[in-house]
Length: 310
Image (cartoon, rainbow, N blue to C red; front, side, top):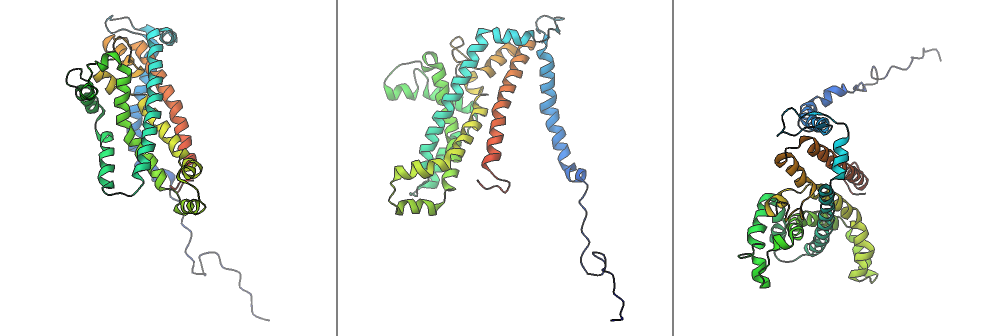
């Protein structure tokens, strides 16, 4: 063969294939997010850094010129404060009880709403309504309508004359918080119920499994991650409850219903102790970050990149 062999053409020159596009500059893709990032840093991180700075200072606003550096003494005094320890205990009890009670009620309501019946859409809307009410409005509603010792509905139904907010302050706050957060738990668990494979449920029914057996062996394992996610997300928000305590009990009687956010408010805006209130705020933020870290890990483990449930 006498013809001259032609060297292979470079990619994209003679083959008609388009040249591969180079990736755009990463900073150009991220530029639209920079204003939101800068705003977030300005309204969250800078105030937190200022709070950390004040937590190392001894400063009471009613004593001008008293500001001076004390190191970790504020943190030592905070943990030595019996009122702070009591507020921390109330916070833990309030969070644990409210999360698990609202989650149990949410599981029961989700199981009922997962069935078809007349007016299911209306019932779902009514159940969601408490979660849409502002926490302050919900707290005032329960204080004046449910727990009032003279005109309250609870005393009217039970035929008693108990001053619930004075005799059972923490329990009264728990009731309002559970009422507020049960719809959130219901929606999250209902989403997990509707994500179940219908084929698996039908196969279990064909094999002769009863409702309890199907729930214990199939439905509950399917919901385990949703229940964990509901518990952790609920804990993050409930641990910072302030509206219900401030508007219903003012932390009383005494400190019976005082939690950490309300005690920080008292030390900062009633006691004017900037140093120790800042130290308490830093402690609460650290505890919340620990819970948030477990929440994010659970979310990434539960949901894959495409948005589906693993």
